[in-house]
Image (tube, rainbow, N blue to C red):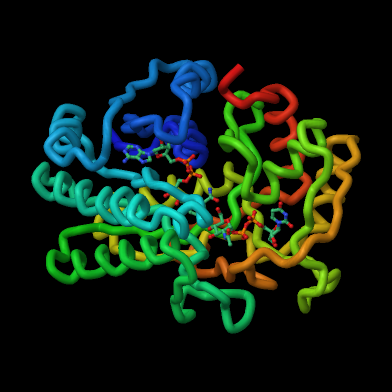
Length: 338
Ligand code: NAD
Ligand code: UD1
């Protein structure tokens, strides 16, 4: 079964590509490489032992996306393509509304025209804003605190409206918590451009000596050690979640759903630092710094719905996440660029 991965050359898409091949699907990548490197394609070929099919272009180009869907006889789409930097979305909101919302509209129109109505969408725990309590279930109120988060909310609503208008659509919305780690081969991983915004890649760059120390944003939160608590999920578990989601949608009588993909466990910033030191055998010096605007104290999932609906649950530990992130960082200090 041929599956299109928009944004398939990116961090989560590339890992999911491998999981799809292992599960017997035939993935096709669509990417404009605005936030990824073509070198990932050779790495995917080396890991899977199969030629990689990639269509280079923009998801905003509706007629071209429709032609791609038809050319490859695509049965379902995993929609990863989009921009994801929260700070940038505050500075350049129109870029986010155009690429994320415009991209989703363009893709859905192309799918409708090509007669393909099975979609898995990359949403985010950011749709819960500052949650009233933890763990977070899918029924919690949704809020947004920045344009990036707003685009995820709007796309979720758009998909819901589409499902009402035409119940033949099969729509899987996956709300990721904090994806980290890398493929255990060390061949593919997260390759942020410039200074990483997210914790794990920053810690990895400190451990490898690229940055002198980590700034820990806030040590006065109402958490056990005062630092922020998040639900870090290994990108391999996340990839397996996409395979499970797709299998559920394409099964006879498959129904639309929205689920959290998280582990159900929260770890503090200092726990991540300790686990990374352990995994790497390197020190990770840190300094406490003021809270980062927009950050919440705690955010972790109740993943029970994904388990009951999809038969999926995360199995990797924080130690696994750090070991795999470190293997990738050490083997590729300049990411795909070297
Ligand atoms: P990424 O930037 O590594 O991958 C996105 C890919 O989409 C890149 O390869 C980029 O070149 C491509 N792309 C962007 N705009 C495009 C366009 N108009 N046409 C074609 N290709 C385009 O990001 P990621 O971490 O793999 O995230 C994938 C998805 O998951 C995104 O939608 C993101 O918002 C969502 N998400 C990510 C996280 C996370 O922490 N990484 C958390 C929650 C949700
Ligand atoms: C951030 C985004 C969120 C997005 C998610 C995944 C913000 C406000 N939120 O979430 O919308 O869905 O990434 O891409 O940007 N930390 C440090 N020092 C650092 C970096 C982070 O102490 O240099 C702390 C943070 O304060 C937080 C934790 O580490 O407590 C995790 O941060 P991060 O990896 O950026 O993820 P989120 O804030 O959960």
